[in-house]
Image 1 (spheres, rainbow, N blue to C red):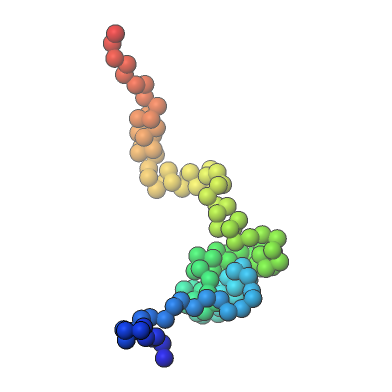
Image 2 (image 1 turned 90 degrees about the vertical axis):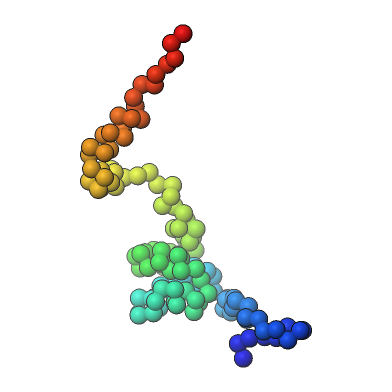
Length: 122
């Protein structure tokens, strides 16, 4: 039976299932990443082991060595998921942006940003 009844007879959906194992979130994310690499959809694998799909996607991009470091606790999921935001933008990424936007647009924006501001005459 998937639905439970309240005191007045109305049916309500079951509560979300929490993790039933003693594994850490990082360990469950590694397991879900392995399941998704074996053919399960990422979201399905995440639901099976009760972990966020974002963690599963991030773990899938790790090397095997980094996965072991994650399991052993040398690195954390929060470091992996939030570290990217603090990194400075690389020169290669800037070049790719300029190629997509076009050099004329980029230079126009730079000209607008660096143009002297008009000062009101006294």
